[in-house]
Length: 161
Image (cartoon, rainbow, N blue to C red; front, side):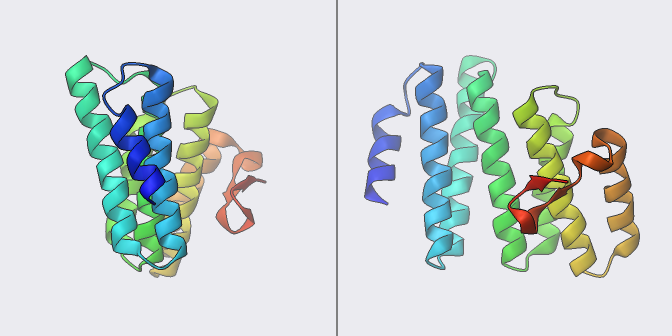
């Protein structure tokens, strides 16, 4: 984890879009490692740091660079999934809704995939929490936007069906 922290510290102030993306990816990977060893709260803190830094960077620069947009989408999606894994369905769904609302009209393939994954995780969380009506609405929305072939199953590693 120290390597991720060193990378973030070294490159965060860079104006280079590639380094901005590298920093956000490092924070997301750090969070993934923390989840892997059962440190969910620390993972959420790392994701919150990634989100905060990307949003603050946008404020300082006037807009998010495209690489930072992808980083923000990834960090938000990861946070939503970690919250769901922790049984914090309401919070997780709120974060996933943020991903959906921010990027649902974006045509960038990576962002469309992030929205589809957010919708898929949301459907699963709604089913798990017993809200099948809302789950069907979210699934119908996913099918309207991505077609039946675009429905993603998280249990299959995020593969599109």
